[in-house]
Image (cartoon, rainbow, N blue to C red; front, side, top):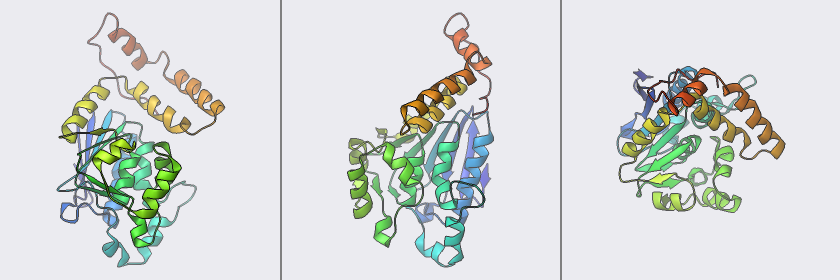
Length: 269
């Protein structure tokens, strides 16, 4: 399945969705059709309760080189489209390409290689896990263009690194490798074949209760920087939602006397 003239490819097999940024001739640089395609696919997957896990990758020689400044700048109205927040939404189109992956109930694994710059890095930060090659180059590159990162990095980066390091990487726009990214806590795994490892991990996650997995993602996204009372309230709220439901009963059965019992689709999270 594809979207927006093949800008983004979507394949779903056995509950695992593979989303491929597909502008390889431009290192998957973000032009307006790419922004629109990514958000459309993310919203589609948010509603699809049969999807257990999402793998997010880039075609060709890079994950994503960030904003295609030359292409987007040709029409000044594009920046208005990117930055305006319609209605009561908390995020705009620029932020949606990264932030919406946090809002999708299924866990998202970003697989990076080649270049992961600027907006591309912010998209990867919107995922729950990041698997990368050792030589993948990362950069919060916006200051090179006299800008600040504006694709939800202010939400996602604070959960991973200290404020002084966040300031350094943002102010300098310096490049760093997958190895350094792992050392400072920005990626989950460094792999010779990150896609293969992501697929193995995805199958493991897909074998668990989809309700428990989705609730775990929501729990940490809502509480990681929250006050104790908020965190404890979310624990109770989500546990009540999944306790004794069909998928929870299946988990009990599979760990006792019915290991072959299958899970149903994810419930509403």
